Image 1 (cartoon, rainbow, N blue to C red):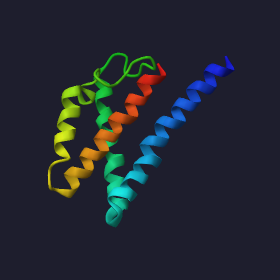
Image 2: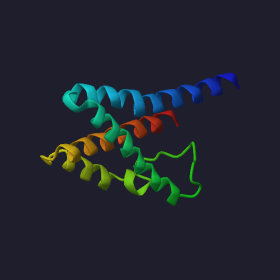
Image 3: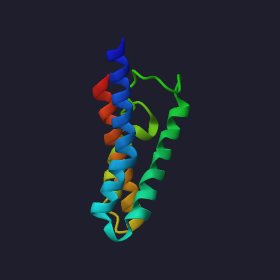
Length: 112
């Protein structure tokens, strides 16, 4: 029982650590001149999780978000990759944030 709880706590720490801390590191490494703005934009891309509200149940710890939710679909991921090619700085940061969000959510699928 304690092992299962530690497993879930570890998963949460890794998941939200990637979302908040590691995305800040990505912003600092790749967008150093404007890393604070880049980090804020990348954190804002977590609004992509609003598509979870369209699912029943809204939260299922045994469900992999990738390929299930609309904005977490493989089509969406392809669009996010294409957005990286845009010359606009903010679109590029949004794309990086969305792709990193998909990576972070994918690692959850490995815990299931």
